[in-house]
Image 1 (tube, rainbow, N blue to C red):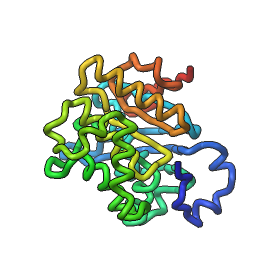
Image 2 (image 1 turned 45 degrees about the vertical axis):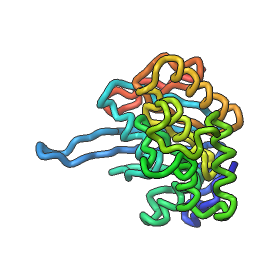
Image 3 (image 1 turned 30 degrees about the vertical axis):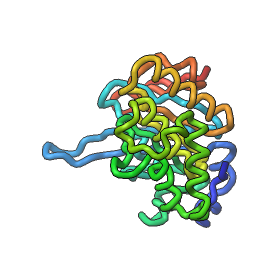
Image 4 (image 1 turned 120 degrees about the vertical axis):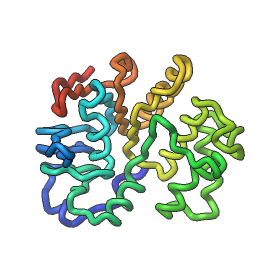
Length: 247
């Protein structure tokens, strides 16, 4: 697993108190959106530190700010106020191009609706992040993709189009794609929302196995019954952290 390859000089100047063993350090984070009826605060006063290797569930009702938080953690969106120091990088100091480079190396994303490109084979979908990040030599990318598909149990589906796979198989393909560049952080937005109970369990067990290997995993979900898989649960209510419980 890679260890935060994109270092920023401005981040280094902050000193070790920002690093310690925290792979994620959110400080006084706030996110506002402008709407026709005025400014709306989706997240407020978010202070959250996550140790490397934790498996965290972020839970809350619809509209509580879960997906907004995930987007800020992944560098997809920027906070209105506060700082996000993730994988030893202050995301607020990065240009958009540097932020995209950072994300490709440090974060793997898994979505509820899979977001596999329908005209590419499963293996080609897994290879896409490798093509963008250019960490893995081109000649080795298909081999790497097949290894990842084997790891998630669907190597026999490699040359099929996504619509030929079941929902559970597509989610496993999406997880393989998220692992393409061996990121230290894996983030998932409602990854079991469209799955039946048996498939849901198998996907959660896969996340637990990846966490046991040392990867930091953050799952955003409205489900509150996944505590047997995670070691910490952060509850959001109206854009604030209402509870932070560690098992």
